[in-house]
Image 1 (cartoon, rainbow, N blue to C red):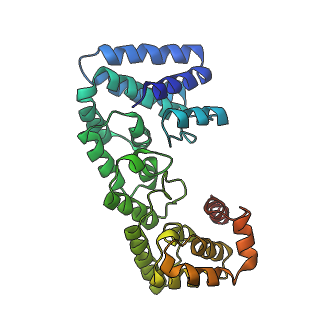
Image 2 (cartoon, helix red, strand yellow):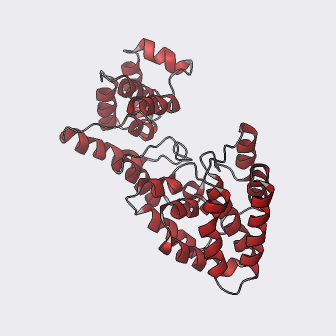
Image 3 (cartoon, rainbow, N blue to C red):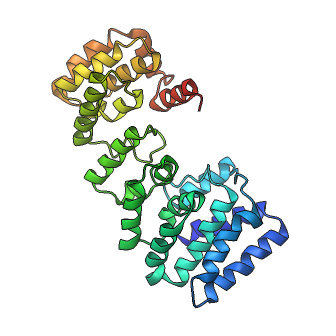
Length: 299
């Protein structure tokens, strides 16, 4: 946790809350920090949505830049006022009681409703590291509630900074299993690896054998680590009549790094000069493919 990040949270809230709402929050925070029990914390976290509202925080581009400067990869662009206030209170509590904070988070997550869970897991990158926190994050990733999973996996630097390769790979695969998306995962390109590429290709084979669609995003993690067998998968994807699948297949082929397959990949991409021209000039990127998929699905 950095004090700069907490200062920013409080600053953003101060700009958006009415004076009486801001005073209420500060008063409750004092009670939380001076209480000898968790009662005031539970009361405060429970009352925050009712007292402060659930409107979007609506951070500006400048504020989002400040967030990323405070903690690389921190993107609270989809946070609400109540979510931000809850996390701010917890951050100040963690400064006050760092040793006991891990137990506090475990207790809160055990009894949290959906909105509280989202706030708790969205804030993990701002909380002090502890074994209890790490175990709780693992517990959150096991959920089948997509909103809770995405609070950890999306726009959150905690996984990229703390997960080993095996844990990272399982998170990415879990995202596909629950029909979540990959683009909002911070570090999705930097943390791609050969083992993940193998896992995702196996997953794609299972989906295709069952007659089920394969998201175009999957190939983002395959291209840089593709072997000859994976080139077959990318060739099939590039030949798709579905625009986003075709674009993903060609883009992944263009990113192959293994010298043993680069020549074949180059020959295949040469078959799609128009698509390659769009890739070269930046019209087709993984983020663009993600956005087009979101548009097609109505999200």
